[in-house]
Amino acid sequence: MESADEAPASRPRRAPRPEDRVLDAERSRRRLLDAALDVFSAKGYDGARVQEIADRAGVNKQLINYYFGGKLGLYRELVKAWQEREAGLGAPGLPLADAVVAYLHDALSDPRPMRLGLWRGLTAPADPGEGEGEEREDLSHTYARRSRGELAADIDPASVVLMCVGAVAAPVMMPQMVRRLFGLDPADPAFEEQYAEQLRRLIRRLALPLPGEPPRTAG
Image (tube, rainbow, N blue to C red):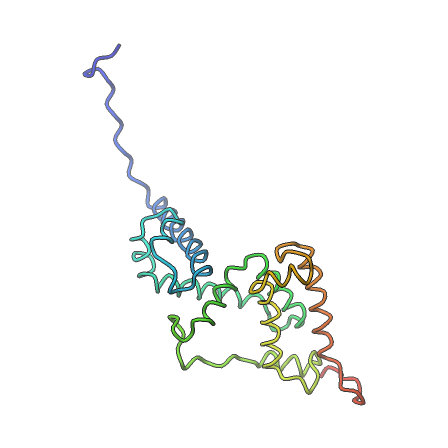
């Protein structure tokens, strides 16, 4: 049996490589953003607690200040990430029905960003980042759809956008209504398939002319 004097010396602790530090930082940031999306989407900005976010992420809450400058910076990073993600969903050249169904699939696959948006609406203008001078939505792409024949001449583009956003948000906002009306859970692929097909049919009818008007052609 070895004596204490004969025991092998412990190996010196190896300092992490720079690339390992970068990977650890990226992992910590991703964990914080994912945990923050959980908490903000469930409780809104005012109800969210930094300690709960850090606990969910499994990191020290001081990292929220280090990476994001605090709770507000973390919240704004989530809003920015959603806006960037949203920009890739409804490409201008995509038919309106396809664009709406793409939004629907995204919302049902991960309802948290939609819930975050609903919280922003419920608490505005108190929510951070919500200024009174918020810019109006750019409706040029929707007007272009009307000129291409996707919308009838008497259909208002602003109303179309609001209607489509509401149609996508409804299953996330009122899952109990989905279960009562369809007998299915919003997370059930069978619901998404049925609802998406009905949205396509409804949106196609937005291009129909009024009774007595000649059929509308693109151009």
